Length: 474
Image (cartoon, rainbow, N blue to C red):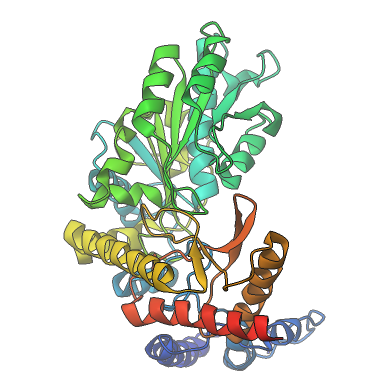
């Protein structure tokens, strides 16, 4: 085989649509990870072929050897990291997105992709209760969502000192201070580094071992700047237990001292959708920029994130681009000028489709169902004699560990829980990772998949106890 042929299209689409349907029909009960997944993945490591195998044969190979090397993260028992599933509407729309292969960066290249990208940002802004005057953009995920928001903050800091950083760079400016709590996420640190601000400019103010913000120390640090610009990052949904910074109080401090307030709302921003949790994000509308993930609680395909900015003019400058061939319709949205990527996937199509299909009420239902499931795990943990919950459950993450009677040495408990964590991933019935909470090895299942049910979270608790008992018995 040398080059693609039109005849291949029907063959491969028939094969993949049939196999995809089979996969999605079975994913609820599918093992999360094949015990030989690493071996299957390593089996692909071959030299570049001189002569191709053809599309149909290649796709069959991908199905036969590739699926066993994958993790069933779209299924209802995947609780690792904070990764959502994909709603039916989003999945189908994403397949169409691939088929039509649009670049929505310029309206002239894709009126559909540009229009739905722009509309999706508007609908998301409305979904979270942010002011309609704000600007926004779709990006690839939480890291780039933080990057876009903090890029606007960087530009604002420069303008406060008479410097256009996109034109002149940062060399003429003093360092830009970035302040946060101990809850600051790795993606925000990464974004600060990519922006040239520098990780060393980040200072965290913590009042306890968990990382809760010390507001007095934060205010004192801002006061020492004598009115100089700074960026404050508030965190809506900390990754270990789903806790929140006091956004409204941090907004008070930022306003008093003239700082830029960015809210990292990767998954916690969705607390705004339920009256039961809306208080957790009170004050988010007072921020200057807000970021969130789409492939978490929105349940759209990887990769998707979004950023909202109070001053929409600040969003366009960091990402502006010009060339003689880039003739544009100025009255139409040109998404390339609002995001780091000039060429970009038309991810707004899947976002629009899922919001159009399920609406505000559907997403409120998803969030509240997951709140109930998280509380279900917490109750079962509290009732079990060999489990210990380590934190409150304000949202959708439950932080707990295996702690059998008579085993109280912390080093022993850490080792036991590490071993359980390894065995869970190999076992494949459920999928959940470990982390450190107050220095203790702990599990932190996150409920964000629309497919997850009570029996799935019950199985999670049962498997941890079963594997824990087996580990102790050795």
